[in-house]
Image (tube, rainbow over the protein chains, first blue to last red):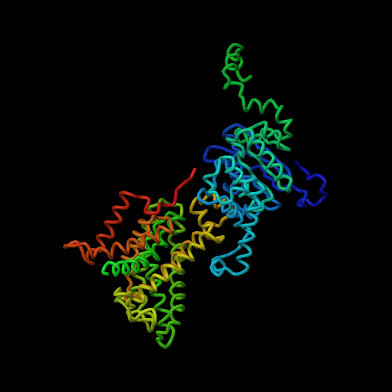
Length: 284
Length: 311
């Protein structure tokens, strides 16, 4: 955590972390949804974010992507502190997908991905009216890149289908393609396999590896433990807004506190409660 | 023959409504605001065109004045529309729906009164408290065409051609350009659009500007067709155009065009209703009866509204 390994003095060199969150805290009134969470992501790394429901995973994502301004702490992306404006965050190279699918449902698959190119293109109102050669070249490049990305996620055949008519698993992959269209350096995936069958989950896993192989960093929120432990280089477990443990999948998997957080012991667990009453010593 | 004549009259009137209705529908589609000041933007388009004509020396009625007037009208309308968006609507972006609606009515009255009191004060400009004669440009006004007994006013034809060009342009803009796609995306889900890197404030400005530009075309066409313009011409025209937008399905651009044409034709056809409820005096009544019927039996409009689909 303290030094950037193998980079000497240049802390912001290519080998440095792409994302550093320092003591990020988010309070809503009296509720502390995220409590002083620090974490960093290196380029080309897949990091998992796990935790029981309500642990603050999505809130933490929202802090990272500029949807929320953290109550305290800061987020440094690619060497700069980002303004809390989603648009600027996307521009800087961070893209995300959503827990509940949020595609533009009345647009085609291709158009959805093309919308993702918005921040990397520049045609203004006048150029769009005149439709000069520069405008047409940009438009063609946008279309070609969008088609490439559809092929990349395995949706090459769905180009002209309306997003809302796609099967559920394809919609999730379309969201990933749209996120990739913004040319990100870091992709945040919020439950990419929620509601998928095992085969689709396997495909999603392959896709995420493919994204990583392009040199992108990936942060994944997921509840499917087998998925996350297969996929990730590192896993951070949040419980009630606090970072419980961060480590390799093997470390996290075997940590009793993680198991406790998910399955629950102590006062919540009826059996434990019973034994406590018998032994007369609460707070085991 | 009489039927054909009324159909032609109705279509050209409807084209005027359609050009204005697009502005209501585009803005509504993106910010869910009924911009009641949009009728005044149409009026300012007409006054802007007139002002440019007055400023160019020589009082020329040459056809070459037409594009100059059009650009003048568009600059005035787009400028005022962007200014009202910035000053009056943007601060209320997150306010309850009723607040911007009332503001829009306020903006509407403000713009009417402003033009009434201010336009005539500019040296060399006519008194704006009364109707002002509009320059009758050659070729687009004057002797009507007569095709097989159906008279077609040149200005009416101009309006229809203008609508056809604008509708084509609009289709391409919305479907085949970066900004158009961003507009569609913002209209379907503004929050997600923002998270995908779209500058939503800019897209809202584009929507206002687009509507204002078409309203300016309508303002110019109105001046040519009715030979004069006045500061309150935006009120009824705006109300009719709003009706047209609702008729077609508010939020739906094709719907606005279809709704405008249908409304125009229905108004014209009112002359065929026999007895005391017929004739042109009753045309507004029948236009709004149509609105009520559509709202009762097909509230989403003729072509169906933008599907509101948010998780």
